[in-house]
Image (cartoon, rainbow, N blue to C red):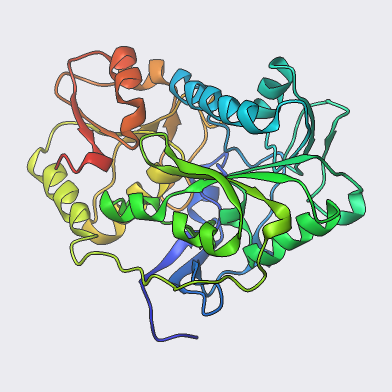
Length: 358
């Protein structure tokens, strides 16, 4: 284990998108530790104590974001990138989730096959298995959206895709941006479930030939389109050292102080996905405060409870109906701010947490 530790946090839920039927079950959920450091070979920031044997991706794993119009617009941006590089090609989407983006590609005329053990539908073109070369599935183009951050040894995984695909084809990769997390002091965006954290420079070391690259979704996501044949098993170029700023966790104390100084009002998290899970956990552990409840538009999370903290998740209608003027809403992702305020109204006090508004 390296001495060059970038960040450490113990007792995180191993899967922050697995919600529970009871608060007791949520509080007792499995946890793991996060110890971020540079991989000595690739330079990728990764969790040195990650245990893949703890992870299960099945129909109970709920990470669908497509219920939001804002996120749907992001998917249309991805479609345009896919169209510009993959038009007329057969596509294989590895990690297609519940099939939202796969169906969108089909609606736009693409020929696509999906692979994901968490898929719940009945599309005969989706294989409900983890990716393996033994499945015999190939494509002239590969889609890998929000998968690589979950995979130990990502270059080996990419090599297995290249090998299964005959060493050729193009690949679209989309992952969260580590630089955005650092710059926005997004302490609630570091999870056990993400074993890897990427910078754009990582991909230029992994691939010799990158055709397109950039960031979008408010800078939160990176993407690259690369030639699989140019994959380097031993990335080349200088490893750029990554560090978190000394004030990275200061936002926790500011939120705790705001909650303690405004007694008598409700404090609500809007966004029951990964950010909201870690946000509530850090408030509890560092400051001993707990928000009242969580609001999320995903119907599969409503009526359930958040891992570790056991906070209840309500629908927007039920959540807002239980709130009073000037109650606080902590918005986990400012990309959705206008959508949230249009739904909830203007009588509440809003804080955009990724904009450091406290």
